[in-house]
Length: 570
Image 1 (cartoon, rainbow, N blue to C red):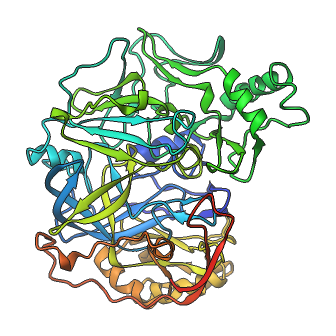
Image 2 (spheres, rainbow, N blue to C red):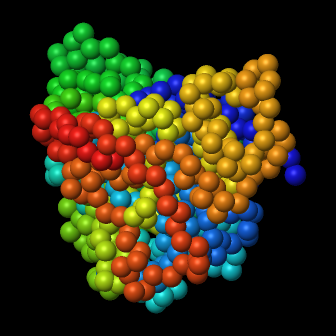
């Protein structure tokens, strides 16, 4: 079995960009889609769900897993457990991934980059499994169906827009509704396992339009199966499509919005530091036509032109663009201000019209409504893209704020022992470099000094930081012209249970939920306190080193002028 080394070159944490230098042939469809597009620019939109455990066909309780997100920076290792889960008053036993070590918090920071991490974990709303699926799906909604709390894998997401309610958020309605779909509902066919992949027509083309302008025409063979993803901020698209959007925005700025946009250069980058004045952004939003993927037979996936720009925080008066370059991904902009039903049983997403304040309860029996949270800047930002809800896990129940993510399928929570690894943490909480990533049961080294031409690891701070871990795992290497070169055994992988023990030799830079701790919002799963917790694991969690105490800067309130600074143990 051939193993190829994956080396990531991280250009910067703040830009959320990477170059994929070499890539192994993963079997995961989402990563194959990512690679085929050559558009690895958006951290949240292109995540690869690589939760393999020594190539087991189906992960069992107590076995270790790894989660690797396709930005190359973010990974977690933990093990699978189960407990009672209360999600929207639907209660059943469900699989829970307990994260014990990782590189970056799972919730993006808001506001970026000094803000608080947005979540205690993530809840994947797609149908799928920890590991490859065996006889049954292990996602939370499937577990609720199996436990009799719901009758089908169906939910409706309702997001109000910022103009309707500056506090944002909305509601999630679990289960099929007896109300039926409203008149005018548009059903988009999807493949609903792992993610919600938009299917092309069997005949004809997919036309991408902006108003009456045709941006691109895809044949069914050329279609790249984009996803509808509540975990991707805004709308991302290939540069050739974005060029048409920029041209239209400049035309609007020069004509209808000439007074408001005078001397404003309209360019759309994937850059959270780029801001536009409110008067100009609001004017362009009002005039911008809708972005539409016309799948034929009256199946149109529409993104409102009014989502092009968003206010960065509810009180900033500064706007940034939510439409950005990347692989074609229908993120939160496609859901904003709408009622959208995801039906994994019948394989469609139904766009049901305006949110209308989320007043209509589309949950099964009217009993399973849960509140969604997230202001405009948190939801629509391409670098954040987080919608949250509360869930309760364990007996007695423990509350967690989790991301609602249609782009994944697992429920992941921080164990109360979870630590983050990397070197030289900066004042804004992120490490200078994470140095390596874990995908499946492979460890891939990278640093700012890595490049495609190097067959060996450079003798730098990242190598010195990682070396004790390599030694503990008994991964051999030798001195070469380009630095330290791994032998073949280095590429053969290792049991994740061994990795979880070995990583304790490294110094963590933080506990996993530290900046939420500082703001008084953190929740770790205290599994020992739950009488219904099950792991089938006789091995205790490995004891990790305590992180250092140092000064961190955290904005707990996005509308506060204060950049809170305190010496905290993280």
